Image (cartoon, rainbow, N blue to C red; front, side):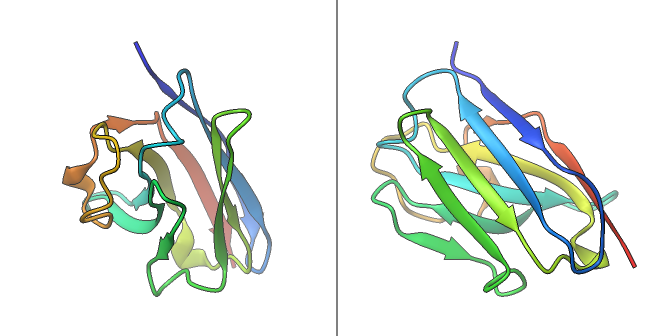
Length: 126
């Protein structure tokens, strides 16, 4: 069974950087869209960014120019590099994959993703 394994995260002061990793146990990333979402207590998962299967990257306006999504296809790993972090970035971050190959629609909807990582906590202090 294919799984997404997340790593990275932790605590950092405002203005700092963190890098999250999302590794697939199978070759998912070359033909599948991968998204990143954040979740805070009592709220739904919110869109952070996505790498569409063809390589186009989308970002939410709140993280644009601060966060960067990259992919290492040789290691089947997608990264979320977070810079200039703000206290409001504090959340649990999830990576997710669309099971349907070549699907690049509605990348900002959590409900459109089928497979999720376990989540990793990011805490930004002021």
